[in-house]
Image (cartoon, rainbow, N blue to C red; front, top):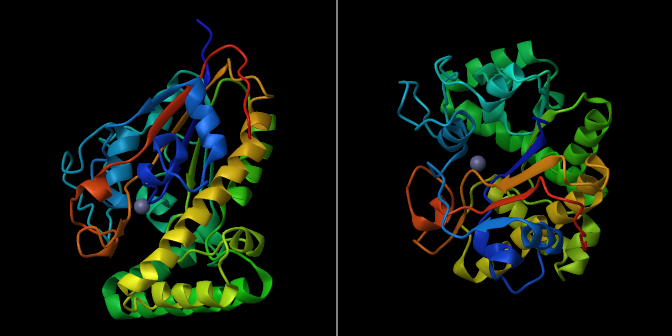
Length: 319
Ligand SMILES: [Zn+2]
């Protein structure tokens, strides 16, 4: 039997009800809609938790968060138990080439997420000089939560200034991750398993300046929201409309990057590749009195999109 490639795309904080294929009116995701039309769209799909550490650990190992006794707490995750077998480890046994591209500190090799991968590109490494110094840095942070918070805020504030002046995203954006993954896919032997975790929809939002313009948001107003997100200042209910607009612009940016690189990754032929798009959890915009996501379990945080397509004859995409 001919094994097919698998591309798994997990998008941090992505709510299904902000995607056009789930009925959202503002244009955020035309390319994802075109993928959904060719495959399956699941309208009642739930994550196993409302934050990255527990949700992704469950998803990528097909286990429940409490199964193996690690403390998958909201902000101080443990290294994944070896008893949890990652999807990459399973597919490796079947002869797959495997790669993982991301910029989420909770999915770093130090927590075991590189297991089973030939290539694991953690873009967060670029912020700190090496994995070794990162480990020392994280150890320091774990001992003192206040130092941890302050260091991250200072780092993000410097990045905010850089975004304001030069448009450089605060987290590695989808375009960069897709571009690097595309380069890998061109050289990888078949079949391959490629996992990309995208952070554009996680705060602090830092869209490209031209996308801001397209969504009618001034740079200064966006910067004020970013400042409040970084320093955890209160966001008023009046500002939520703007926060949602920024969130939508980030989805649009992801959609554009997918439209640019996904067809090329599969040589415009989706017959040999399955594409899975989902999220680790949602995001709240005061539906339950809060904004953001945390260790509470609400429908808004647990309901996530799931779209599976590909593995079919050539399909026509409208981006
Ligand atoms: Zn997350």
